[in-house]
Image (cartoon, rainbow, N blue to C red; front, side):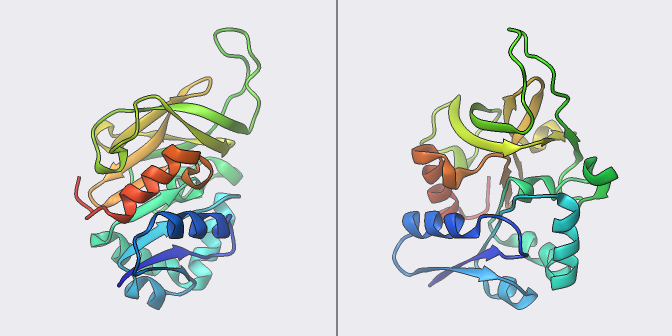
Length: 214
């Protein structure tokens, strides 16, 4: 039996993530919420979803004991970060006056500057809706997904990845930003695959079958 643990630290749309994983997972897979370190230790795969502010996210992880358990979970288990679950993996976020992240990925999280794009269109914040993602390198989680496929985004801050080798996909909204990042057995996306129709479900299906190697 394969066990997928979805981090539950009081933030994020957990129900839709769990339902999407259950939809694509093969028979015999269990999808459960992880509220403590022991839940992560028992899991075969881990999903880190989230919506909201990173300061509250980091604090909730600390209070639940999940933050101390995450390095072990990310050491060798297939690991997927979604939205805030991507941003928290970086070294630092400008949100809330500055918050230290988990430092799994090199780079910073910055606020969209707003303004207008090259065509004069107003760039509203948050960046909300469907936008194209361009894979920057092959990865098992991109299997069966066309280049420049559209995914659904909701975010006011974006990841500015510092190492090209860790960037797996990019998107543009006034500025180019990291839409997907990968390092060893960790893959993380800024968009919401559980809200991204066929392409999003395919990415989740790829994750469920992924051995953690790129």
